[in-house]
Image (cartoon, rainbow, N blue to C red; front, side, top):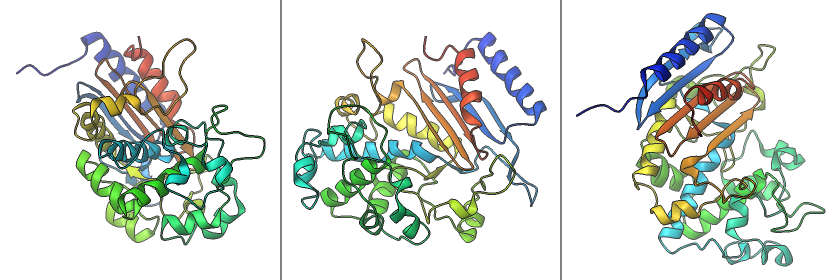
Length: 328
């Protein structure tokens, strides 16, 4: 059986770029580029723990920041497949205590697509109170303001919302009767072959699972600003091979029915076009000491760039996607 590969010219261009990137010694993380789920360019650079001299490796787990939202969205899609959730259902069907005037108008689809009008819990004073200690999603949600932002209206406009994805996490708990973390770990991550997940931000867990410590541009660590663990909106961990496995699972129908996959709209549509399916889109996340890009193409390309220094992944991913003609 012939192994699918890109053209020799594309392979050579990507390998040359990664060699130059390594020589420049200004990137810390992992790059993986695959065609039809077969990697053809992989490079690990920098340190997962610079003080200990521990290098990053292909299988190192990195903080995914907002790419975590994909796991939450897929879990919602699974519940649509099972008839437990409808994309047009109102929020109040699952969370009846939510303010009724807005909650009756907010749909599950609006929460997924960032058009519900909800805000960003990371800026909420209540989040800072529980950030280091919350154990359940319910504890986190109880501490913050999850209402529609002042001046916003459900369905009126796209406005990126971390809080909206916390509410989706609560909907998953209501519809399944299970803890969000347990359900998503079992039904989404393990099924897709993702070995990382919602690892707790503790030194013991880091030593056990080997995830990369994050660094600010000044070289100090992000250890004190991380939450107790990730949430439905951000902060899960995965390796580059994990995300390749996740892409494969999506395309092969292991996680969702194809028709449901097409209905999960997470990004605004380009002008004059319909919104792309999540398997033909690029997802990115940036946080303190975490930078990640996960690109999936209908041409069969997967591009994963995971970095443990703030703001490093996007530029590298953009260059690679241009070299492989990712979206053309």
